[in-house]
Image 1 (cartoon, rainbow, N blue to C red):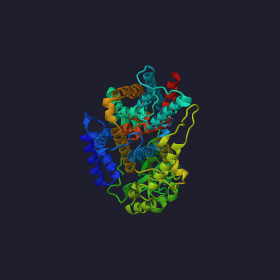
Image 2 (image 1 turned 90 degrees about the vertical axis):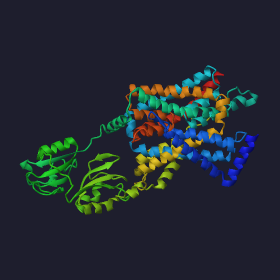
Image 3 (image 1 turned 180 degrees about the horizontal axis):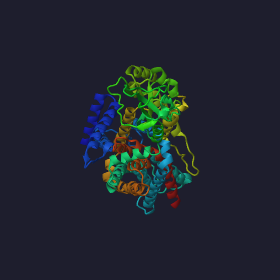
Image 4 (image 1 turned 120 degrees about the horizontal axis):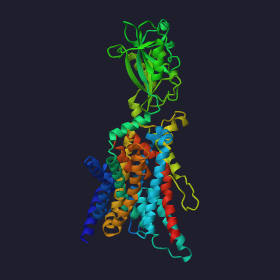
Length: 596
């Protein structure tokens, strides 16, 4: 009685002071996020919860907000309150931001990854799904848990909210089917039990995923930095890298000929960026420059093309051809002028107009020969050599504005989110299943972001550019996942998480759900690395993707300075897995109902 009076007074006083439930909700989210981030920074022997800490902090904040302040996300009759609706919206919007940023990041390299090990990753993800379903059905068949609790445990163990919705709907539809014409609804078909079991399973399923990633690292003695370097090397495999060579003119057949006559230069396979006459100063190379004996040229190209050019005109030398101390300089010009995006590099005539030598173009970290037919894209880097005045003048043509590059164009972001939600809302009917399949609010924006990052510029005639600067991707990632996890925790804490855990079947549900989540990914994780020789970081991303689990992905992304490997693994399996995860609980309900 005293607790109720005290809680009512506290809530009334605070509510009167703030005069807004929005303010209370925002404070709860902020407090949960701060405490969770601090908790995630705690480490034991180098291992910590990372972003997963905000989930547990959210549970604590939600529990005390409910216990002492009367904060509710559901009414006594089970209806969602206004506060619950607000929290749910912010939670889902955070998830949308997170997955959209992931899609934009991995989009340019996503399809090439499918041609490589993508099929293997999807195969292992399917095995993980089948393993989880098999364990859950076994628990039901052995009489350990009823159908409704099994579905809640399964969807929580795979940390998949859309699967929770599909499973709950299927339980409800099946109960209605049993109850038609005065029929009796069997025990175990209560839709209200499903989310409760989900809340018990979810937090510790996240821990299982993090634990598997740590155990795999220990079992195989993996060093994360080495795994990151191995991924970078495998990514570059099959992609020719550019080399440089200084060559002294010795072949008399080339005395009096021009730089443009050097094998490979005329065809565009080799670039001569610097020229130094015997006893003279270093200058910008021009194709019309006449060669003399003992002149030195600085060539850029593939090793095989450079060797051919060197054999034709003379011999390699170790002369220093640095621009330091000379009147010319080397600079990277950033393409930020949207007016030239989609144009050919040759159309800029940088060599002719500004007496510059273009030695290479860099896109997404990959260096390429600057062929005149090369189509420029926003964010490309053009490596040029020339005087500072000429480089500056050329920079005005291409843009070369880091401020513009780092400015986030919000219109493409919201267009992409809008289209992604439309895509996720498209129903995919499955024969015999009452509810249609959907990619949902997470899968739709992810798939759309991947498509827009890869093909969007072309589809819009280079009028809209969809890629985001790295700082924006990092911000959307962190903000989105923090909002999502904090609110999941607050909602669980305010919905009787502690009471179900200590006074109800919560501990049993949690224990069985941990088996569903842990065993399949542990076994498959070992097989992925041992049998398929999949890179550890990619495997961690695929494991997180097989559970469509943003917290696990956020943890995996934080293991190495470049999150591309884990993000690629996640995005490769996510769309296919999302479909199967939504379908699987519905099929499981049908199987269980047929056995009654």
